[in-house]
Image (cartoon, rainbow, N blue to C red; front, top):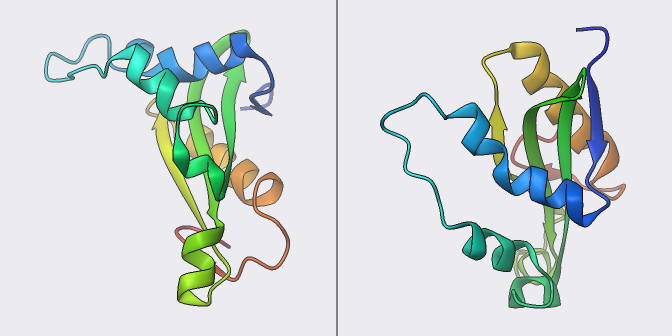
Length: 126
């Protein structure tokens, strides 16, 4: 996928794309139950979610030819790491069209750009 770009979410408009991407991916799935958009916004807003008092997150979108194809988030929870004596990172909000290249690109971007150096443990760290 030569024109595939994975970019960090840096604006409110991109955050809206991040939140609403599942509606595009699952639009034809009769079993998909969409989350409430307002709840998703609150969950990702450091001003409303106490998780961000001790944690950091970065969000990424996969884009090709102006079409959003996937998303992923990366998290570091300082309280959890301190409690467990670890340097651990996590991912979440993973959604992708049915394309292995998109999924690989999202996980690569998450691993290369979001986790601080020295993370030695986590779900899907290299």
